[in-house]
Image 1 (cartoon, helix red, strand yellow):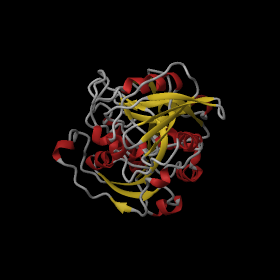
Image 2 (cartoon, rainbow, N blue to C red; image 1 turned 135 degrees about the horizontal axis):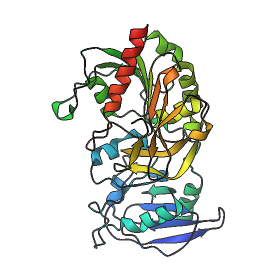
Image 3 (cartoon, rainbow, N blue to C red; image 1 turned 180 degrees about the horizontal axis):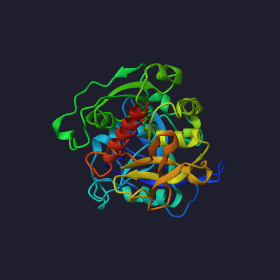
Length: 364
């Protein structure tokens, strides 16, 4: 992942006759960025900086999907969120670089306009000056986020206990605690630490396991609940994760977030689909049908079996943002309820998960 930042260079589209798309490529002082686009509508000039190369650790040649992000805060979360693995992030909030172009500034609006027309694009960022334009474009043509297992690159390698104490400045909701303790097994598909912090704040003792951890081993841990975490990429590219989810349905209360939500949708017999833009930002309106987002895929509600309820809907495009299957003690959200800084109105879902575990233990 890399963010684009200041200096001067020009970006121009090249006709890509092999894929009937236009390819956007521009060079900066110490790095080159190229994008693939399905249409040429205008010539674009973008200013960028050599600091872009330093934004990606150990960068030599990197490629990925390019979404834009509309948040004006949470830079640390965005730059360290495993859900962005395999992607470039283009910051577009007015307070970040969308206010105009100076010699030492970046006009992110030019790239954003192209993304708004064509959807997320495939990009390549390289510091290898020996690479020709055509070689870089060929690299971009050869990569696609669809069908790529990005989870394996961000998951933990072995189980571990989450023992970090939640600091007072993150402890903004303790009303839901009742003194009980719940044993939660969390599948790490790229889990964010704030998710683990929030669960711990609600009285959960958490064991984090790798994405490939066998369901049979999870059941040996006798969990009160199971979390399927957020993570990057295409849920259809990780059938092993879907099979683990299937094996655990009905075995304990389940909470899925982001990638976990999509895997639950597939495990229940539903289908997921690639979105044109995805949802990236902290200001997406969601309707809670019962009374911070980052994803490129969504669950198709029409493909879900009887008994599965759509609990949340994205008001921008009507896509599914939450599910529940009461008969099997399952709940899920497409967005990130732990987002901080940001609105805390979704934090209550962690309490709902705890309540579900409490009811289930009471019925045993």
